[in-house]
Amino acid sequence: MKRTIGFIGLGIMGRPMSKRLLEAGYPLVVYDIVAKSVEEIVAAGAKAGASVKDVARQADVVITMLPDSPDVEAVAFGPEGVIENIRPGCTYIDMSTISPTVSQRVAQECKARGVKVLDAPVSGGDVGAINGTLSIMVGGDQATFDDVLEIFQVLGKRIVLVGGDAAGQVVKACNQIVVALTLEAVAEALVLGTKAGVDPAKIVEVLSGGLARCGVLENRGMRIVNRDFDPGFRIRLHYKDLGIAMSAGKAYDVPLPVTAVVHEMFKQLKLMGRGELDHSGIVTLIEDMAQVQVKKHE
Image (tube, rainbow, N blue to C red):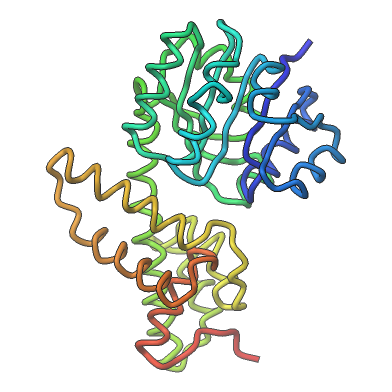
């Protein structure tokens, strides 16, 4: 019989991830501060937890998928949190993208209570979550990783144990640098091509077949052209993630000059009221500067 999974955090990523676990036959107990999100997953076959504490006490494996470090701290720690209420010997997997230092603290507290723990942030956005094709970068020990690998395989296709506690968060910071800088590069290219009179849809088509092909072009290229900025991953969250990367650069004495520029661009977008747009909305900042809009030619 499959283990009961407690899933806390039913946002853009958490909802499709939890649905995939249900489809794979895992008993699921879910919780989110947004009642409508809970109702959606309960309708798909999950059981609603009354609180974080209630979920943790019912589950063999608890997964959290939350927006930021303070959210994980609020859910993980304290008398009503996951760590004090999950049974010793069970497993806590944090799949949020947070500060490595917070992830280290989670690991230390779990181990002190006899709870197995992994940090396992993901890449692939809402599309990857829906299709079960996420890239999952895992920090922790080999035995715990092996024990829950079948759960990860429901959610992702490339699943790698990258190192010890918090190593997953370090690799996620690296991932977010590459994604952000690539988004900005694609934005510049599409704005340049558009202002020069070339159909941006044709630019996406041809670049997708050459050395410039990448996940950003595949998943976001035509969404930019079609002006679809419904969030798969919000600008404000990528701004947060680049803040984590900048802190890591400072801690490890690694210059991140271009990351710093793109971090400021995301900050500007937030100040302009565009923080809830998909992160591909960085193109709108370049458009403003160039006084042209990328859109499909009719």
